[in-house]
Amino acid sequence: MSNVPAPLSAKDLFTPDFVKNPYPTYRQYLEGRGVQYLNTDGGIWAAFKHADCSTFLRDPRLSAKRTGILIDQLPAEKQKEFAELARRFSLWLLFLDAPEHTRLRKLMNKGFSPAAIESLRPQVEKIVDRLLKPLRKDHQIEILSQFAHPLPAYVIAELLDVPESLH
Image (tube, rainbow, N blue to C red; front, side, top):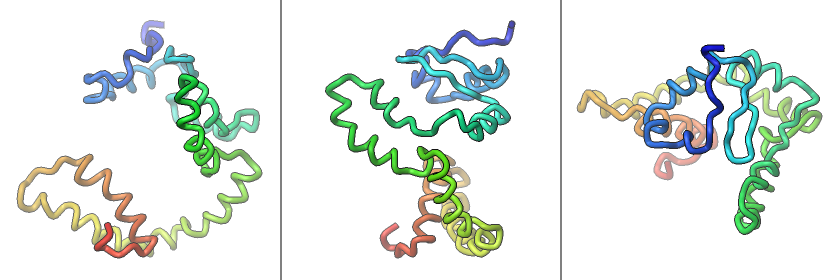
């Protein structure tokens, strides 16, 4: 029981120290027991271990339809403000259960086959080279804001044939 962390509270989340370096907190929970209660507003149960997450994602007794829960946590006046956003989120594949999720995922799988992904290599390498170009001159980049965040957006824009001038 010595490495079971105290329940995380809402005041612990998004403090300047947590935002600057959340990894000690993540590590603490990862090393704790499987599913753990987080004492946030409304309280939630969270899984931190990959095996637990995989198990829960495949358990048909659990649902991905949770956008309503997110809205329910808000004050009444904010619920109306965010209702349309929640409705739109509820249409995302991430928030759908089988069989609807399964049907849509099968349609998308072709675009993510090993051959399809490999065919993107030249475009992705070009984007990576462009993003790393400042490193040649400055020898330093802010990895999250200058590389990790824009990379997927540029790759998606490339996939959708968005002209580079609109990136």
